[in-house]
Image (tube, rainbow, N blue to C red; front, side, top):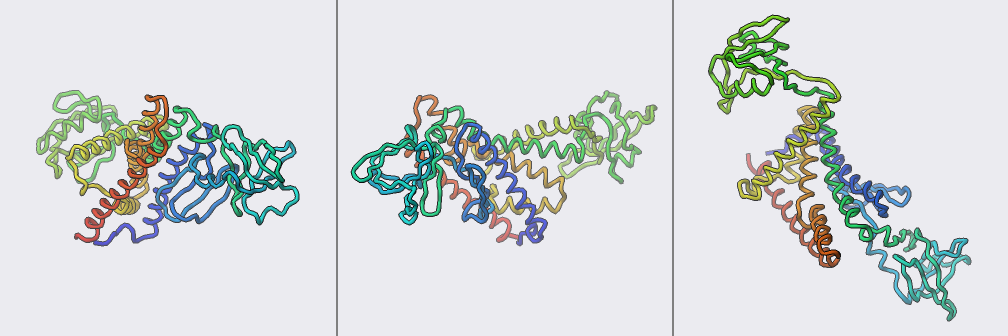
Length: 424
């Protein structure tokens, strides 16, 4: 079966915009809290793979990469390229007016300037003492190093990072909030999107007042009109819209007496309840819609909570075996559904984007290696032990976790291909 939602420019554009927005907001959460903690952020990337576009502002390089999946904030302390500086290595340095090293130049092709000082590295500390000792013509000289000195590799310049500018040099609390901020930003995005829906399309009211009455439905056939306020059903007073829904849902096929208020007068109306596909009662009428900023804000918060609870329930069913892996959707399935929802209108697409954002936030909080939740778990262990886990051991655990996640993605992608392409 073809992927029908991917055959239009509108659908493809919707997929790119939605996923770029989710990743951008997630990484922006990490980035802003890292900057607030004083961590040197070397790169803010949207996408994965080769760099297509880049520009540098301040200390950070901003890039767009070829594959529109994922993103990253590369923080100081995660830079194997800085390990190239070794004792007994020859280099040249540039000094400022105070005699501090501002550039460490490793490429001999760039040693031509007479203002440079050349020598052999005897000792260096670019993390705490910020010092460099060079031997020149048999004489050793110790230089102070500027905290924003540049390490020059060929044509690439990399800013050094003292320990207090590195992720690992921050307190447990600062590192916790830097990691947690990514998933938190996704929940905030969901809230904003759902509140925006409330502003644009209104918020369903819980007042017992009828909104749109579908033509030909049981309510329309009984003579009910939009704007009617339901006072009672079968003699029982009604104060909230949900009470109407509950009574109607459990009364398929029955005829109920509605007492309504219309134009200041009360009327008694006999309504024969219809039946839906789930054998529950329906009268084909919607609740009234409220348009107000405060109602939109409350709706955004309530809907975010409800979707979060629903997704957590589904995750619980997955771990308890109620759902199997064959029922999961991967990138192919999510792309397909996003394209389909884009065809159904902006309201549906915005709601779907909010649900995906909550999914992304919750998934990243799972205490699995390579996810934000896994890193938070290691921070919890560090807080309990009073010292960090060996970085090499932690790195190996995250590497194995990443391999497992890639395998899981392959499995669910195969499920998607079987479901959408190989089966009718």
